[in-house]
Amino acid sequence: MSSAGPRGIQAVPQELRDRESWLDPFDWYRRMRESAPVRYDEERHSWDVFRYADVKRVLDDDETFSVDPREANDFVEPEEPGEGLMLDTMLFEDPPRHGELRGVVDDWFRPRRLADREPRFREIAGGLLEDAVGADGRMDVVADLASPFPVTVIAELLGVPPTDRDRFKTWSDALVEAAGAEESADAYADRQRETQVEMAQYFLEMIEARREEPRDDLLSVIVTAESEAGGRLSREEALGTCMLLLVAGNITTTNLIANAVRCFVEADADLFDELRGDERALASAVEEVLRYRSPVQAMGRVATEDVTLGGETVEAGDRVIAWLGSANRDERQFESAGEFRPDRSPNQHLGFGYGTHYCLGAPLARLEAEVGLSELLDRVERVELAEDRLQPTRSSFIYGVESLPIRYDERGSDPTRD
Image 1: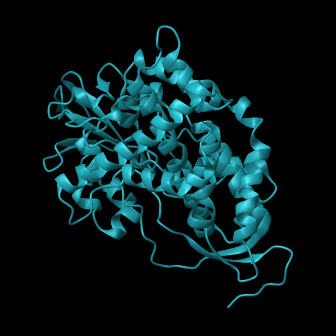
Image 2: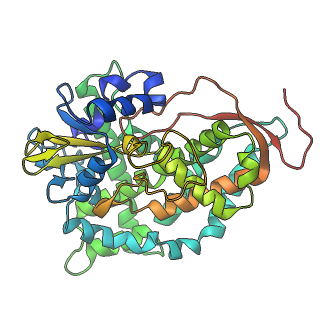
Image 3: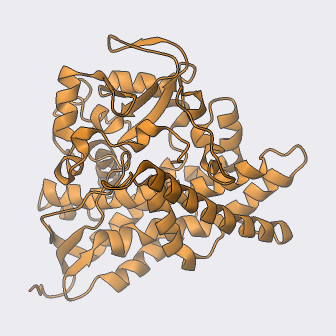
């Protein structure tokens, strides 16, 4: 997520560079699990890991597989102030510093605390859908719900104006995008750098405002941790944490909600009716979405020592890409792994990672998805995709679609479709 970060996680494998392959990469994953479960990609200078057991091992062994890109043999130090701010986050820190950084904000993402905010989350999602759902029977799930909903939620938690959500979305998309097909490495790095500097300037102003007037919000918690005696956070870590929460707080949920609607529509025409009003069934279906179409398909690590993985020797300083999206379709772990089963149990997917770096925002993403989807289910029925040619999100590790147009009947009204 930084121009100075792991090149391997930014570069899209050759096999996934066209629209169709990144929209549905799962056949390629299956072939790799069978023929090359651990393979070295010369072009990307990275090891790719595809099977569940191997992916889980990589994510769970902090001593052998570091999240810190500075451990890589080919790491390049940031050249300008602000360029490497995302490196100063829990995302790229190993224990024990990872736990210290996470502990600053961890309490805000506990399920019990988030439960108190559920009525407000429903109000936000409901308001968006009141504007989107109408007699014309068409909407774009991404533009009308999946994108603005989590951006508004994380903005409110941080304590920054929801009116800035368009800027937040632009920044988030830029930081997770892969380089364009015709874009040079320098142009891509410049674009990433400009985005980080813009975000840093924005949050510096917000941080100064909270020093003068603290509030009951996450930004004030971060500012207090920076300025208190002993300085739990450095200035760079405070900025990096704000930036990370903004990006991670909306990009995953956006794709989780959109992927869920796509899964539901493709799975069974009656599934919307079966899930409506059944909180437990909906929660189970969301878990299956996290397995079947994981919003995060890959995570990067760096080997800290020579290690044998899947019969291959990974050397110290080598980059390793753990393909969550492949692990979650591994037939060795999941019965009928290629089928979407909304009531699957058990379902020990790796959709939010595993181990020390298990996603901090997982409880928030789950709650937002369940709230957003339940509000949608309450308002629509007989849902169909309105576009056959979907465009995948342009990223090497975030998985979703740029838009998801649907047709539907509004519940409680006469069906009217073109």
